[in-house]
Length: 204
Image (cartoon, rainbow, N blue to C red; front, side, top):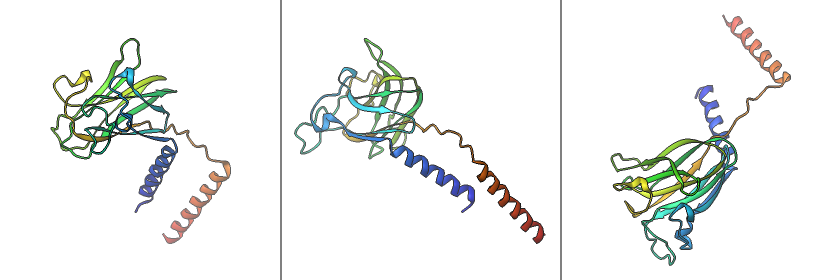
């Protein structure tokens, strides 16, 4: 394995570890308590999304066997989240099977009606089990929505394809400050490079 490959993997691991410290996970309330989250006015609170942070939501668009309060299996699901500083947010939905046809949307909280900022849909024309998009957000309150594909899917009024569970992930890449090496570190690096140069010249 090359030094570049090792460095890349270590960098990705560091990013994942940094993000995991700011991760929050939830089970959709409609599936656990029966409390509806079918519109922005009833949105379930998911938390605050920060740079390097992740919000994980486990939900369902089906009736869960053995669960008394299982909510509406084909209703739209809305999740409220806050943003404290400008960031790039990615909404990703993962389903257990490529036969699912999810729809995801991002709304702002403008009164009196929420405004759809961005969306994506899967009409089952591909074999993917994930669907995502990225959008630049300013500080404020937003809603992430999950529904199923149908004609006129972008009204997010529910209905459409259902019968599947999902994981909804809201994430933002961390803001990494440029590291300024200490003088001692620079000196050691230069000394090491100098020694490598001497060795290579002696071999030549």
